Amino acid sequence: MNHTKRRIQIVRWVARIWSILLIGFGLLQVIEPDVTRPVPWHEWVGPILLFSGVVIGFALSWQWERAGGLVMICCHLGAILAASLSRGEPMPANVIVMLILLFSTPGVLFLLADYLDQREQIDQSAMSPL
Image (cartoon, rainbow, N blue to C red; front, side):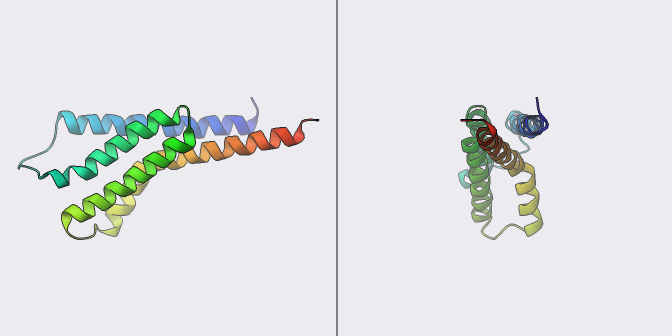
C-alpha cells in the first residue's frame, strides 16, 4: 500500500471511530436522559437531528463517503438552527463552534477521504499507459 492510500485509510478510520463514539454518546443520552422537567417537542428536534445525522451519515459513509459526510454536516447544521430557534435566540458563537467541531468533523473527514480517494484514482489513471 502506498503512502497516499495509507493516509486515506487513516482519515477514513478516524472518521469512523469518531462517528462510533458520537453514536455511543447519543445512545447514553437516550438511555439515561438528564431531564428534570417535561421537555417540549421543539427542544427535541436538535438532538434528534444530531443523533440521526451521525447514524445515517455513518451508515451511508461505508459505501458512499461523500453522501454520508454531507448528511452528517447538513443534519448538524440543521440541529444548530433548530436549537437556536427553540431557544428563541441565537446560540452563543463559542457553543456553535464547539458543536460544529465535535459533531461535524467526522463528516468533513469523510468528505476529505472521498476527495483524496478520487484524486488518487485520477493520478493513477493519468500515470497508467493507454
